[in-house]
Amino acid sequence: MNINKQIKVTRRIMPVAVACFMVLIFSTAAMAVTHKNSEEIKKLDETACSDGFSFVVVADSHVDDAAFGKIVQIASVIKPDFAISVGDSTKNGTQDEYAQFINEISPAGIPWFVVPGNHEYRTPDGHTSADGRQRFEKVFGPSDFTFTHCGWRFIGIDIVAYESLLPGVLAKMEKALKGYEGKAAVFMHYPPSIIKNWEDGYWSANAKEMMALLEKDQVPFFFSGHIHIYDHLKIGPTDYIITGGGSSGVDTDVPKEKYNDPNGGAFTHFILVTVKDDKATYSVVRPNY
Image 1 (cartoon, rainbow, N blue to C red):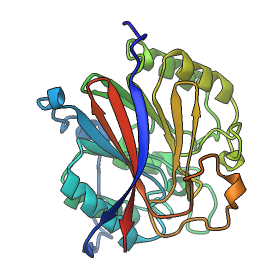
Image 2: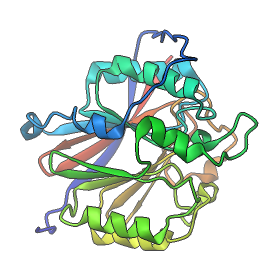
Image 3: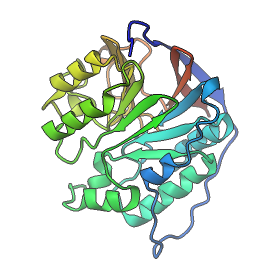
Image 4: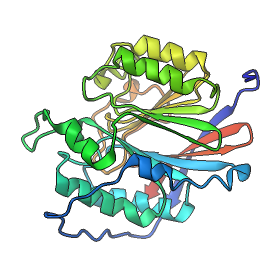
């Protein structure tokens, strides 16, 4: 593949006014729920790829259901090809919380993929649960997954299970990216802690190797959450993005000098990516209250 003609990535901040949206929560104590990422792949519509495509990225929606409900409502209106939650979709990854989350995203009416966050692997007392990964995979399937859409490769990675990128997973990433130079996006909950101001991302093992891989394959996007802010830093061909504003529980204690992007901040938001021909743009969408 000729990668000399690279996809151009631009960005802008876009306010969106929305009406109040209420999510009806049902009692799910006795209900077994599943929302397999593999089943969501089957819902992708390839017939409209000639007109381009779009997708939504959101993370850390576990603090405020009402704010996340407004994001879901916007998604139901703009109808992207799919959405992906990049971790911390629940407080403690319980069966009831998973059922509630699935109930919340259903009104969007689009394929919705889920990457695990540290809160999915927690116990109610705030500790990491030994069976957290098993509980997640029972609902969503394998915590590492890939899929293709409109000629692009999308890779979801479980970075929270070991708080590091295992060599075997890195090798799988390299294999998954082959043939998709300049047309790929990677999603994981923690950002690499070796990036300036993102030390709270925790993980550093194989971070340099992963970033070198993304540069080699000209990967346009890396998405993460965990830090409850929006921030962005372009390194080589890759836009590294923290989108931790999926609720109103944003981290207003982060000082301005700790942002890499002058437009970064602690506000409720999600990311909208639009791909058309050889141009990919992303917008930071802020619901108005």
